[in-house]
Length: 453
Ligand code: ADP
Image 1 (cartoon, rainbow, N blue to C red):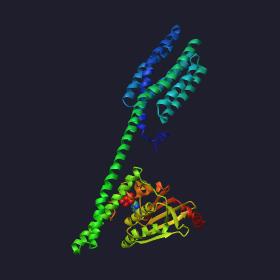
Image 2 (cartoon, rainbow, N blue to C red):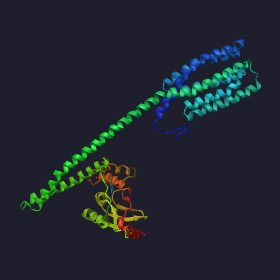
Image 3 (tube, rainbow, N blue to C red):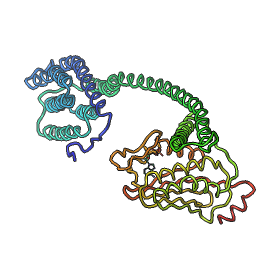
Protein backbone atom coordinates (compact mmCIF):
# COMPACT_ATOMS: atom_id res chain seq x y z
CA UNK A 1 0.00 0.00 0.00
CA UNK A 2 1.27 3.45 -0.86
CA UNK A 3 0.79 5.60 2.26
CA UNK A 4 2.29 8.69 0.63
CA UNK A 5 -0.30 8.73 -2.14
CA UNK A 6 -3.66 7.85 -0.67
CA UNK A 7 -5.45 9.54 -3.60
CA UNK A 8 -3.35 7.98 -6.34
CA UNK A 9 -5.43 6.05 -8.86
CA UNK A 10 -3.69 3.74 -11.32
CA UNK A 11 -4.68 5.07 -14.70
CA UNK A 12 -3.57 4.65 -18.31
CA UNK A 13 -3.76 8.45 -18.57
CA UNK A 14 -1.19 9.02 -15.82
CA UNK A 15 1.50 9.95 -18.34
CA UNK A 16 -0.76 12.50 -20.05
CA UNK A 17 -1.69 13.89 -16.65
CA UNK A 18 2.00 14.33 -15.67
CA UNK A 19 2.70 15.99 -19.03
CA UNK A 20 -0.28 18.32 -18.48
CA UNK A 21 1.00 19.31 -15.02
CA UNK A 22 4.49 19.92 -16.43
CA UNK A 23 3.10 22.24 -19.07
CA UNK A 24 1.05 24.09 -16.47
CA UNK A 25 4.11 24.75 -14.32
CA UNK A 26 6.00 26.08 -17.34
CA UNK A 27 3.05 28.29 -18.35
CA UNK A 28 2.71 29.48 -14.77
CA UNK A 29 6.40 30.38 -14.57
CA UNK A 30 6.21 32.33 -17.83
CA UNK A 31 3.13 34.16 -16.52
CA UNK A 32 4.86 34.69 -13.16
CA UNK A 33 7.87 36.37 -14.79
CA UNK A 34 5.53 38.56 -16.85
CA UNK A 35 3.37 39.58 -13.90
CA UNK A 36 6.25 40.24 -11.56
CA UNK A 37 7.12 43.31 -13.70
CA UNK A 38 3.85 45.27 -13.07
CA UNK A 39 3.92 44.00 -9.47
CA UNK A 40 7.37 45.50 -8.92
CA UNK A 41 6.19 48.76 -10.52
CA UNK A 42 3.11 48.87 -8.24
CA UNK A 43 5.27 48.08 -5.19
CA UNK A 44 7.73 50.82 -6.13
CA UNK A 45 4.93 53.42 -6.40
CA UNK A 46 3.39 52.25 -3.11
CA UNK A 47 6.57 52.20 -1.07
CA UNK A 48 8.83 54.86 -2.52
CA UNK A 49 7.60 57.59 -0.11
CA UNK A 50 8.51 55.52 2.99
CA UNK A 51 11.75 53.73 2.18
CA UNK A 52 12.87 51.54 5.18
CA UNK A 53 15.07 48.41 5.66
CA UNK A 54 11.86 46.28 6.09
CA UNK A 55 10.56 47.61 2.80
CA UNK A 56 13.90 46.79 1.17
CA UNK A 57 13.38 43.16 2.22
CA UNK A 58 9.89 43.08 0.70
CA UNK A 59 11.18 44.76 -2.43
CA UNK A 60 13.99 42.23 -2.74
CA UNK A 61 11.49 39.35 -2.38
CA UNK A 62 9.32 40.85 -5.15
CA UNK A 63 12.29 41.08 -7.50
CA UNK A 64 13.20 37.51 -6.45
CA UNK A 65 10.03 36.31 -8.22
CA UNK A 66 11.89 36.48 -11.56
CA UNK A 67 14.82 34.14 -10.74
CA UNK A 68 12.55 31.80 -8.70
CA UNK A 69 10.15 31.42 -11.64
CA UNK A 70 13.08 30.87 -13.95
CA UNK A 71 14.48 28.17 -11.62
CA UNK A 72 11.08 26.44 -11.27
CA UNK A 73 10.72 26.45 -15.05
CA UNK A 74 14.13 24.80 -15.52
CA UNK A 75 13.24 22.14 -12.93
CA UNK A 76 9.90 21.47 -14.68
CA UNK A 77 11.68 21.24 -18.05
CA UNK A 78 14.11 18.75 -16.50
CA UNK A 79 11.09 16.47 -15.87
CA UNK A 80 10.27 17.34 -12.25
CA UNK A 81 7.22 19.64 -12.52
CA UNK A 82 5.93 18.77 -9.04
CA UNK A 83 9.17 19.87 -7.39
CA UNK A 84 9.28 23.04 -9.53
CA UNK A 85 5.76 24.01 -8.52
CA UNK A 86 6.51 23.28 -4.82
CA UNK A 87 9.37 25.79 -4.90
CA UNK A 88 7.19 28.37 -6.64
CA UNK A 89 4.15 28.01 -4.38
CA UNK A 90 6.18 27.93 -1.14
CA UNK A 91 8.07 31.06 -2.27
CA UNK A 92 4.79 32.90 -2.87
CA UNK A 93 3.43 31.73 0.51
CA UNK A 94 6.50 33.29 2.21
CA UNK A 95 6.31 36.43 0.10
CA UNK A 96 2.72 37.10 1.08
CA UNK A 97 3.31 36.21 4.75
CA UNK A 98 6.32 38.54 5.06
CA UNK A 99 4.50 41.34 3.19
CA UNK A 100 1.59 41.04 5.63
CA UNK A 101 3.87 41.17 8.65
CA UNK A 102 5.96 44.07 7.38
CA UNK A 103 3.28 46.29 5.82
CA UNK A 104 0.18 47.55 7.57
CA UNK A 105 -2.75 47.46 5.16
CA UNK A 106 -1.45 44.48 3.18
CA UNK A 107 -3.05 41.89 5.48
CA UNK A 108 -6.48 41.99 3.67
CA UNK A 109 -4.57 40.47 0.73
CA UNK A 110 -3.39 37.52 2.78
CA UNK A 111 -6.63 35.52 2.56
CA UNK A 112 -7.36 36.01 -1.19
CA UNK A 113 -3.65 35.54 -1.92
CA UNK A 114 -3.53 32.24 -0.04
CA UNK A 115 -6.77 31.11 -1.69
CA UNK A 116 -5.25 31.85 -5.11
CA UNK A 117 -2.16 29.85 -4.20
CA UNK A 118 -4.26 26.91 -2.97
CA UNK A 119 -6.28 26.98 -6.22
CA UNK A 120 -3.05 26.93 -8.22
CA UNK A 121 -1.82 24.09 -5.99
CA UNK A 122 -4.98 22.10 -6.72
CA UNK A 123 -4.53 22.70 -10.45
CA UNK A 124 -0.89 21.73 -10.64
CA UNK A 125 0.06 19.38 -7.87
CA UNK A 126 -1.42 15.91 -7.50
CA UNK A 127 -3.82 15.95 -4.50
CA UNK A 128 -1.58 13.58 -2.52
CA UNK A 129 1.22 16.21 -2.57
CA UNK A 130 -0.98 19.29 -2.37
CA UNK A 131 -1.94 18.62 1.24
CA UNK A 132 1.62 19.52 2.35
CA UNK A 133 1.07 23.00 0.84
CA UNK A 134 -2.32 23.23 2.57
CA UNK A 135 -0.77 22.42 5.96
CA UNK A 136 2.07 24.90 5.32
CA UNK A 137 -0.36 27.66 4.24
CA UNK A 138 -2.60 27.16 7.29
CA UNK A 139 0.31 27.28 9.74
CA UNK A 140 1.79 30.38 8.02
CA UNK A 141 -1.59 32.09 8.11
CA UNK A 142 -1.92 31.41 11.85
CA UNK A 143 1.68 32.57 12.50
CA UNK A 144 1.11 35.84 10.56
CA UNK A 145 -2.13 36.55 12.47
CA UNK A 146 -0.33 35.86 15.78
CA UNK A 147 2.63 38.12 14.95
CA UNK A 148 0.31 40.88 13.67
CA UNK A 149 -1.52 41.04 17.04
CA UNK A 150 1.77 41.69 18.89
CA UNK A 151 3.93 43.62 16.41
CA UNK A 152 3.03 46.91 14.79
CA UNK A 153 4.04 46.84 11.13
CA UNK A 154 6.87 49.25 10.28
CA UNK A 155 5.52 50.18 6.81
CA UNK A 156 2.13 51.79 6.25
CA UNK A 157 0.52 51.24 2.86
CA UNK A 158 -2.26 53.72 1.96
CA UNK A 159 -5.79 52.25 1.54
CA UNK A 160 -6.32 53.13 -2.20
CA UNK A 161 -3.08 51.32 -3.11
CA UNK A 162 -4.32 48.21 -1.28
CA UNK A 163 -7.54 48.28 -3.28
CA UNK A 164 -5.54 48.50 -6.51
CA UNK A 165 -3.42 45.58 -5.42
CA UNK A 166 -6.53 43.53 -4.56
CA UNK A 167 -8.03 44.25 -7.99
CA UNK A 168 -4.72 43.27 -9.59
CA UNK A 169 -4.77 40.02 -7.62
CA UNK A 170 -8.35 39.32 -8.79
CA UNK A 171 -7.28 39.67 -12.45
CA UNK A 172 -4.24 37.47 -11.85
CA UNK A 173 -6.45 34.79 -10.24
CA UNK A 174 -8.80 34.81 -13.21
CA UNK A 175 -5.96 34.58 -15.71
CA UNK A 176 -4.23 31.80 -13.79
CA UNK A 177 -7.32 29.68 -13.38
CA UNK A 178 -8.95 30.11 -16.78
CA UNK A 179 -6.32 30.98 -19.35
CA UNK A 180 -3.45 28.90 -18.06
CA UNK A 181 -5.74 25.90 -17.81
CA UNK A 182 -6.97 26.47 -21.36
CA UNK A 183 -3.62 27.30 -22.87
CA UNK A 184 -1.90 24.29 -21.42
CA UNK A 185 -4.54 21.83 -22.56
CA UNK A 186 -5.37 23.38 -25.94
CA UNK A 187 -2.95 21.38 -28.05
CA UNK A 188 -3.64 18.23 -26.02
CA UNK A 189 -7.32 18.65 -26.88
CA UNK A 190 -6.42 19.28 -30.51
CA UNK A 191 -4.33 16.10 -30.56
CA UNK A 192 -7.20 14.18 -28.98
CA UNK A 193 -9.66 15.57 -31.53
CA UNK A 194 -7.48 14.57 -34.45
CA UNK A 195 -6.82 11.12 -32.91
CA UNK A 196 -10.58 10.62 -32.51
CA UNK A 197 -11.13 11.71 -36.11
CA UNK A 198 -8.46 9.24 -37.29
CA UNK A 199 -10.08 6.49 -35.26
CA UNK A 200 -13.51 7.15 -36.73
CA UNK A 201 -12.04 7.12 -40.25
CA UNK A 202 -10.09 3.94 -39.52
CA UNK A 203 -13.22 2.34 -38.09
CA UNK A 204 -15.14 3.11 -41.28
CA UNK A 205 -12.37 1.55 -43.38
CA UNK A 206 -12.25 -1.52 -41.14
CA UNK A 207 -16.02 -1.95 -41.33
CA UNK A 208 -15.85 -1.82 -45.11
CA UNK A 209 -12.92 -4.26 -45.20
CA UNK A 210 -14.73 -6.62 -42.85
CA UNK A 211 -17.89 -6.46 -44.97
CA UNK A 212 -15.87 -7.22 -48.11
CA UNK A 213 -14.13 -10.10 -46.33
CA UNK A 214 -17.49 -11.55 -45.26
CA UNK A 215 -18.83 -11.25 -48.82
CA UNK A 216 -15.68 -12.85 -50.22
CA UNK A 217 -15.80 -15.72 -47.70
CA UNK A 218 -19.49 -16.30 -48.35
CA UNK A 219 -18.94 -16.38 -52.11
CA UNK A 220 -15.85 -18.62 -51.97
CA UNK A 221 -17.38 -21.00 -49.48
CA UNK A 222 -20.39 -21.34 -51.74
CA UNK A 223 -18.13 -22.09 -54.70
CA UNK A 224 -16.31 -24.72 -52.64
CA UNK A 225 -19.48 -26.51 -51.62
CA UNK A 226 -20.52 -27.49 -55.14
CA UNK A 227 -17.40 -29.54 -56.06
CA UNK A 228 -17.34 -30.90 -52.51
CA UNK A 229 -20.88 -32.23 -52.86
CA UNK A 230 -19.81 -33.93 -56.08
CA UNK A 231 -16.86 -35.59 -54.27
CA UNK A 232 -19.21 -36.81 -51.54
CA UNK A 233 -21.93 -38.08 -53.87
CA UNK A 234 -19.54 -39.91 -56.21
CA UNK A 235 -17.42 -41.44 -53.46
CA UNK A 236 -20.61 -42.62 -51.71
CA UNK A 237 -21.89 -44.12 -54.95
CA UNK A 238 -18.57 -45.84 -55.50
CA UNK A 239 -18.66 -47.18 -51.92
CA UNK A 240 -22.11 -48.63 -52.65
CA UNK A 241 -20.51 -50.50 -55.59
CA UNK A 242 -22.43 -48.39 -58.15
CA UNK A 243 -19.37 -48.53 -60.46
CA UNK A 244 -18.58 -52.19 -59.89
CA UNK A 245 -17.05 -54.11 -56.99
CA UNK A 246 -14.16 -52.47 -55.06
CA UNK A 247 -11.10 -54.14 -53.66
CA UNK A 248 -10.22 -53.65 -49.97
CA UNK A 249 -7.53 -51.01 -50.57
CA UNK A 250 -9.73 -48.90 -52.83
CA UNK A 251 -12.67 -49.15 -50.38
CA UNK A 252 -10.45 -47.90 -47.52
CA UNK A 253 -9.15 -45.05 -49.64
CA UNK A 254 -12.66 -44.03 -50.73
CA UNK A 255 -13.96 -44.16 -47.13
CA UNK A 256 -11.14 -41.81 -46.20
CA UNK A 257 -12.08 -39.48 -49.08
CA UNK A 258 -15.75 -39.54 -48.04
CA UNK A 259 -15.03 -38.86 -44.32
CA UNK A 260 -12.61 -36.05 -45.11
CA UNK A 261 -15.10 -34.48 -47.52
CA UNK A 262 -17.83 -34.60 -44.84
CA UNK A 263 -15.54 -32.96 -42.30
CA UNK A 264 -14.54 -30.31 -44.83
CA UNK A 265 -18.22 -29.67 -45.54
CA UNK A 266 -18.98 -28.95 -41.87
CA UNK A 267 -16.02 -26.56 -41.68
CA UNK A 268 -17.10 -24.75 -44.86
CA UNK A 269 -20.69 -24.62 -43.62
CA UNK A 270 -19.53 -23.06 -40.36
CA UNK A 271 -17.46 -20.43 -42.20
CA UNK A 272 -20.39 -19.73 -44.51
CA UNK A 273 -22.80 -19.41 -41.59
CA UNK A 274 -20.56 -17.02 -39.72
CA UNK A 275 -20.02 -14.88 -42.83
CA UNK A 276 -23.77 -14.76 -43.37
CA UNK A 277 -24.33 -13.76 -39.73
CA UNK A 278 -21.64 -11.05 -39.93
CA UNK A 279 -23.07 -9.73 -43.18
CA UNK A 280 -26.56 -9.73 -41.63
CA UNK A 281 -27.80 -12.14 -44.29
CA UNK A 282 -28.87 -15.06 -42.12
CA UNK A 283 -32.58 -15.58 -41.67
CA UNK A 284 -34.20 -17.28 -38.68
CA UNK A 285 -37.41 -19.08 -39.56
CA UNK A 286 -40.41 -19.32 -37.32
CA UNK A 287 -42.30 -22.55 -38.05
CA UNK A 288 -44.00 -25.19 -35.91
CA UNK A 289 -41.83 -28.21 -35.10
CA UNK A 290 -41.93 -31.29 -32.92
CA UNK A 291 -39.55 -31.25 -29.96
CA UNK A 292 -38.91 -34.98 -30.43
CA UNK A 293 -37.47 -34.23 -33.90
CA UNK A 294 -34.90 -31.93 -32.30
CA UNK A 295 -34.06 -34.60 -29.72
CA UNK A 296 -33.70 -37.30 -32.38
CA UNK A 297 -31.35 -35.15 -34.46
CA UNK A 298 -29.00 -34.74 -31.51
CA UNK A 299 -29.33 -38.40 -30.48
CA UNK A 300 -28.50 -39.73 -33.91
CA UNK A 301 -25.61 -37.32 -34.52
CA UNK A 302 -23.89 -37.29 -31.14
CA UNK A 303 -24.79 -40.04 -28.76
CA UNK A 304 -23.21 -42.79 -30.83
CA UNK A 305 -19.89 -40.92 -30.79
CA UNK A 306 -20.24 -40.62 -26.99
CA UNK A 307 -20.72 -44.38 -26.77
CA UNK A 308 -17.63 -44.96 -28.90
CA UNK A 309 -15.67 -42.90 -26.35
CA UNK A 310 -17.21 -44.91 -23.49
CA UNK A 311 -18.98 -41.86 -22.13
CA UNK A 312 -22.36 -42.23 -20.52
CA UNK A 313 -24.78 -39.92 -22.29
CA UNK A 314 -28.41 -38.95 -21.92
CA UNK A 315 -31.04 -36.54 -23.21
CA UNK A 316 -33.82 -35.69 -20.79
CA UNK A 317 -36.87 -33.69 -21.78
CA UNK A 318 -39.07 -32.33 -19.01
CA UNK A 319 -42.65 -33.65 -19.22
CA UNK A 320 -43.72 -30.03 -18.70
CA UNK A 321 -42.35 -29.08 -22.13
CA UNK A 322 -44.98 -28.75 -24.87
CA UNK A 323 -44.62 -31.30 -27.67
CA UNK A 324 -44.78 -28.66 -30.35
CA UNK A 325 -42.85 -25.41 -30.43
CA UNK A 326 -42.44 -22.66 -32.96
CA UNK A 327 -39.02 -21.63 -34.20
CA UNK A 328 -36.18 -22.60 -36.52
CA UNK A 329 -35.59 -26.28 -35.83
CA UNK A 330 -32.50 -26.49 -38.07
CA UNK A 331 -30.79 -23.60 -36.30
CA UNK A 332 -31.87 -24.90 -32.87
CA UNK A 333 -30.40 -28.27 -33.78
CA UNK A 334 -27.22 -26.54 -34.93
CA UNK A 335 -26.88 -24.81 -31.54
CA UNK A 336 -27.54 -27.99 -29.59
CA UNK A 337 -25.25 -30.07 -31.84
CA UNK A 338 -22.40 -27.58 -31.46
CA UNK A 339 -22.69 -27.65 -27.65
CA UNK A 340 -23.19 -31.41 -27.38
CA UNK A 341 -20.48 -32.05 -29.97
CA UNK A 342 -18.03 -29.97 -27.91
CA UNK A 343 -19.05 -31.70 -24.67
CA UNK A 344 -18.32 -35.10 -26.20
CA UNK A 345 -15.18 -33.92 -28.00
CA UNK A 346 -13.53 -32.48 -24.89
CA UNK A 347 -14.66 -35.08 -22.33
CA UNK A 348 -12.39 -38.10 -21.89
CA UNK A 349 -14.34 -39.88 -19.16
CA UNK A 350 -17.57 -39.52 -17.23
CA UNK A 351 -20.77 -38.28 -18.75
CA UNK A 352 -22.48 -35.86 -21.08
CA UNK A 353 -26.02 -34.87 -20.24
CA UNK A 354 -28.54 -32.78 -22.23
CA UNK A 355 -31.63 -31.42 -20.49
CA UNK A 356 -34.53 -29.59 -22.07
CA UNK A 357 -36.94 -27.91 -19.67
CA UNK A 358 -39.20 -24.90 -19.29
CA UNK A 359 -38.05 -21.84 -17.35
CA UNK A 360 -41.05 -20.11 -15.88
CA UNK A 361 -43.96 -19.78 -18.28
CA UNK A 362 -42.36 -17.68 -21.01
CA UNK A 363 -38.97 -19.33 -21.56
CA UNK A 364 -37.36 -22.69 -22.07
CA UNK A 365 -33.78 -23.83 -21.90
CA UNK A 366 -31.36 -26.41 -23.23
CA UNK A 367 -28.64 -27.40 -20.78
CA UNK A 368 -25.54 -29.32 -21.89
CA UNK A 369 -23.41 -30.61 -19.02
CA UNK A 370 -20.17 -32.57 -19.24
CA UNK A 371 -17.48 -33.89 -16.94
CA UNK A 372 -14.65 -32.68 -19.18
CA UNK A 373 -11.54 -30.60 -18.43
CA UNK A 374 -13.47 -27.38 -17.75
CA UNK A 375 -12.84 -23.83 -18.94
CA UNK A 376 -10.96 -21.18 -16.91
CA UNK A 377 -13.29 -18.39 -15.77
CA UNK A 378 -11.20 -15.68 -17.44
CA UNK A 379 -11.82 -17.40 -20.80
CA UNK A 380 -15.63 -17.45 -20.57
CA UNK A 381 -16.00 -14.40 -22.82
CA UNK A 382 -13.19 -15.40 -25.22
CA UNK A 383 -14.58 -18.81 -26.21
CA UNK A 384 -17.67 -17.18 -27.73
CA UNK A 385 -15.52 -15.13 -30.12
CA UNK A 386 -14.92 -16.44 -33.63
CA UNK A 387 -11.73 -18.43 -34.33
CA UNK A 388 -10.81 -18.50 -30.63
CA UNK A 389 -9.80 -21.70 -28.88
CA UNK A 390 -8.30 -22.42 -25.50
CA UNK A 391 -4.62 -23.22 -25.39
CA UNK A 392 -4.68 -26.95 -24.75
CA UNK A 393 -1.11 -27.65 -25.76
CA UNK A 394 -0.49 -29.06 -22.28
CA UNK A 395 -3.50 -31.34 -22.50
CA UNK A 396 -2.87 -34.97 -23.47
CA UNK A 397 -5.70 -35.11 -26.03
CA UNK A 398 -5.19 -33.01 -29.12
CA UNK A 399 -8.74 -32.21 -30.20
CA UNK A 400 -9.42 -30.61 -33.54
CA UNK A 401 -11.64 -27.62 -34.20
CA UNK A 402 -11.94 -24.26 -35.88
CA UNK A 403 -13.15 -22.13 -32.97
CA UNK A 404 -16.37 -21.31 -34.81
CA UNK A 405 -18.95 -23.53 -33.09
CA UNK A 406 -19.60 -21.38 -30.02
CA UNK A 407 -19.43 -18.11 -31.98
CA UNK A 408 -22.13 -19.38 -34.34
CA UNK A 409 -24.22 -20.79 -31.47
CA UNK A 410 -24.10 -17.56 -29.46
CA UNK A 411 -24.97 -15.45 -32.53
CA UNK A 412 -27.91 -17.70 -33.39
CA UNK A 413 -29.16 -17.62 -29.79
CA UNK A 414 -28.96 -13.83 -29.83
CA UNK A 415 -30.87 -13.65 -33.11
CA UNK A 416 -33.60 -15.81 -31.52
CA UNK A 417 -33.84 -13.35 -28.64
CA UNK A 418 -32.25 -15.70 -26.12
CA UNK A 419 -29.17 -15.99 -23.92
CA UNK A 420 -26.25 -18.36 -23.72
CA UNK A 421 -24.20 -18.82 -20.57
CA UNK A 422 -21.42 -21.03 -19.31
CA UNK A 423 -20.46 -22.32 -15.88
CA UNK A 424 -17.35 -24.37 -15.42
CA UNK A 425 -14.89 -25.71 -12.90
CA UNK A 426 -11.45 -26.85 -14.02
CA UNK A 427 -11.09 -30.62 -13.77
CA UNK A 428 -14.78 -31.04 -12.89
CA UNK A 429 -16.74 -30.10 -15.99
CA UNK A 430 -18.68 -27.51 -17.93
CA UNK A 431 -22.33 -26.59 -18.28
CA UNK A 432 -23.66 -24.49 -21.15
CA UNK A 433 -27.19 -23.13 -20.77
CA UNK A 434 -29.19 -21.71 -23.66
CA UNK A 435 -32.33 -19.85 -22.60
CA UNK A 436 -34.88 -19.00 -25.29
CA UNK A 437 -38.28 -17.36 -25.43
CA UNK A 438 -40.99 -20.00 -25.46
CA UNK A 439 -42.94 -19.69 -28.69
CA UNK A 440 -45.85 -22.01 -29.30
CA UNK A 441 -47.47 -22.63 -32.70
CA UNK A 442 -50.60 -20.50 -32.89
CA UNK A 443 -53.00 -23.46 -32.91
CA UNK A 444 -51.42 -25.14 -29.88
CA UNK A 445 -51.23 -22.04 -27.66
CA UNK A 446 -53.88 -23.32 -25.27
CA UNK A 447 -52.51 -26.84 -25.25
CA UNK A 448 -49.00 -25.57 -24.45
CA UNK A 449 -50.29 -23.35 -21.70
CA UNK A 450 -51.96 -26.40 -20.16
CA UNK A 451 -48.72 -28.39 -20.24
CA UNK A 452 -46.74 -25.61 -18.63
CA UNK A 453 -49.35 -24.91 -15.97
P1 ADP B 1 -13.94 -25.59 -31.59
O1 ADP B 1 -14.66 -26.60 -30.74
O2 ADP B 1 -14.12 -25.84 -33.04
O3 ADP B 1 -12.53 -25.39 -31.19
P2 ADP B 1 -15.81 -23.75 -30.40
O4 ADP B 1 -16.13 -22.33 -30.75
O5 ADP B 1 -16.91 -24.72 -30.41
O6 ADP B 1 -14.64 -24.17 -31.34
O7 ADP B 1 -15.16 -23.74 -28.95
C1 ADP B 1 -14.15 -22.79 -28.63
C2 ADP B 1 -13.24 -23.34 -27.55
O8 ADP B 1 -13.95 -23.40 -26.31
C3 ADP B 1 -12.80 -24.76 -27.80
O9 ADP B 1 -11.65 -24.78 -28.64
C4 ADP B 1 -12.49 -25.24 -26.42
O10 ADP B 1 -11.18 -24.84 -26.05
C5 ADP B 1 -13.49 -24.50 -25.55
N1 ADP B 1 -14.65 -25.37 -25.22
C6 ADP B 1 -15.86 -25.34 -25.82
N2 ADP B 1 -16.69 -26.23 -25.24
C7 ADP B 1 -16.00 -26.84 -24.26
C8 ADP B 1 -16.31 -27.87 -23.28
N3 ADP B 1 -17.51 -28.44 -23.24
N4 ADP B 1 -15.32 -28.22 -22.43
C9 ADP B 1 -14.12 -27.64 -22.46
N5 ADP B 1 -13.76 -26.68 -23.35
C10 ADP B 1 -14.68 -26.29 -24.24
